[in-house]
Length: 328
Image (cartoon, rainbow, N blue to C red; front, side, top):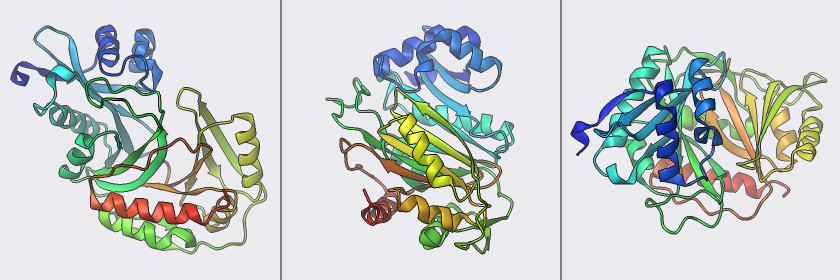
């Protein structure tokens, strides 16, 4: 049945059909919600915030999708996500064909690698990523909202928030960068770099000499109940700034992204750890440098991740041990 399916780039004319495909797969629960707005899809295609490949059936309806997104203007990597396959066309290798098409798109964009996020609701994507050579780099606990419907894929839909596995897939050899590894996570980060085949030159990361003021930006995803804080420059007042943003935007989960080019990263990691933040993921080449993501949970309604791959289980063990040492 899948031999007759065409894999090609998403176009503005496909927007309504793409929305219909998401609704068949997830009802009205999928995040990000812009996939339910054809006009927004067309807008994002126009300015290249969204680039996708789709599977087109002989009926000319879209029955599969995978997106490429750019995490940061300075990043040499891209994000792959929003991978869906209509239940009528599953178990025929369509996800792999979409993946091949999107990798070609990523290569054409000049990316040295891509990040992808595997739901722990089922094993399909976790296994596919490992078979393709992806290296797990972290676990985002409670990342997927409890209201997410999986229709024919998972029944009944999970009652609690679910985790997602972060993985990195190289497409080319990344340049050797200087990185300041925080003392708390040095050994774990070295293991992840090694597993991903990424060479790095370590520079010292001390607990002193932190600038007085941090520069941060943030965005709050209300549907996902997720607060993201992006630290452009670290500073001694980072913890206070994070506290203020969290008060303004109460969430179930907070992520803080720190650049590993800052030599004072050890100090701010310790400050945030004392505030309840713990390891989430390493994101190589995610911005102007590699990014360390920390996470903090404000909810107890999350499920222990169901992980397929040994490496992911080892990272989860390290994450839970780190969380146990924070002040909750």
